[in-house]
Image 1 (tube, one colour):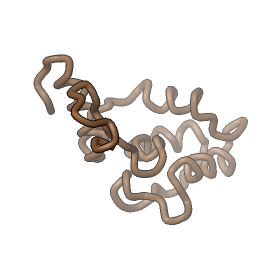
Image 2 (cartoon, one colour):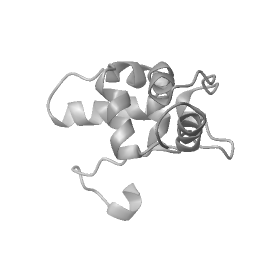
Image 3 (cartoon, helix red, strand yellow):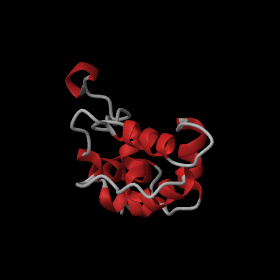
Image 4 (spheres, helix red, strand yellow):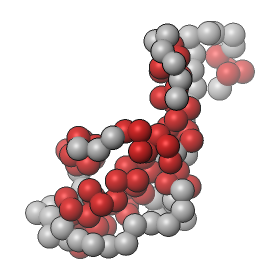
Length: 113
């Protein structure tokens, strides 16, 4: 992407390897509570969880097998998962998220994590 954009100091490319929901996996206990099910958390580093079953599908599955009134809805449920949790937990477990957050902090003149 940098080659395509050229020299542009305002351009800061970052990518989520699979789904945004990979960054929610560190909060599996909260997901279990919202879904009303105790399904075991996916194994491995959150940003590498996929294997033809992406993180969004895994979260959707626990909502559908649990006592939740309906399926996982990203805009509604991602906010509910994150609202009572420390983003630092996901930043510590997810290198791409950490790089993204550090870029934002750096651009704002703050001290990176």
